[in-house]
Length: 324
Image (cartoon, rainbow, N blue to C red; front, top):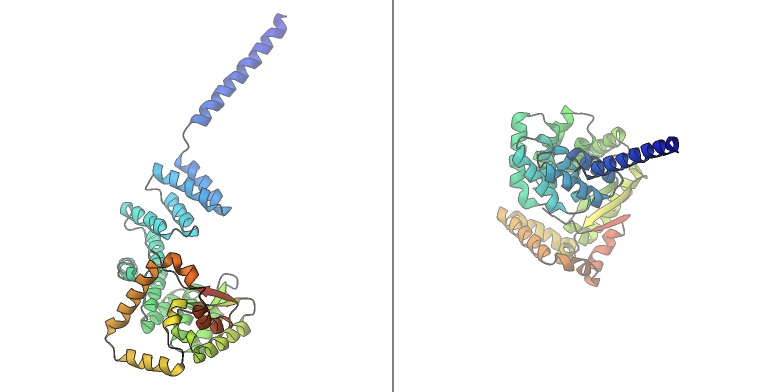
């Protein structure tokens, strides 16, 4: 009996000890590395809400952890919460003001808000002061100049980036875009084809004909849109074509080529700040009616001013939202 009882007690003791050890292990607080590992796993599985939660826990434990901050930034960005995404980079840069990657992430996010361009330019100046040949900083500067319609400067930025790194598809896409905007279509086509050759899968999920262009409301603009869409498909039938049209802008735009030409001519003699003021008022108004925008975009009048241009493309994108 004793021989049977002793092994039984020994096994029971070991099991109890193991249970206690497991309970202690379970109660041990997770480390920053644990949270980051779980956040990365969730992010890779496209579970951005869980990734956000786990990355936030890591940041709460260590606000200076770069990987945790970047994961949280990416999770917020994929959820469309750009304000909190920007907040993560701003807070991280308070701890690491010279971090190049964080500066670039924040700068590229700010591109969505034209009022943030002066702040982006400060970031760019800081990066280029350290390294005048920083390709990513030059690309960011090119996008800012393109957004400000400083097309010659933007072209120079993208051309310099491309000369430093000839195998950079983003530099070639930026160069081609500015060349197209300057009506230099043969050179733009060369840049786009070279970019596609370098990165056939990564370049251009969609080919975009433009972004908030007034001409899309006029007969000439509609015709040009069809020509550009047909050309894009001829060059690459594997990609869809889109055009980002601001329905509210089209609603206020001239409806004939002649009226548009008159407006363009009048703009040439206006003070430089006049268009900036108009854009500021328009953006402010759009911000006020943001929640109502999905309903406004379905108005028959908006449909009438956009449908012919949308008919040229495969994917209709309505209104480029800017957020910061």
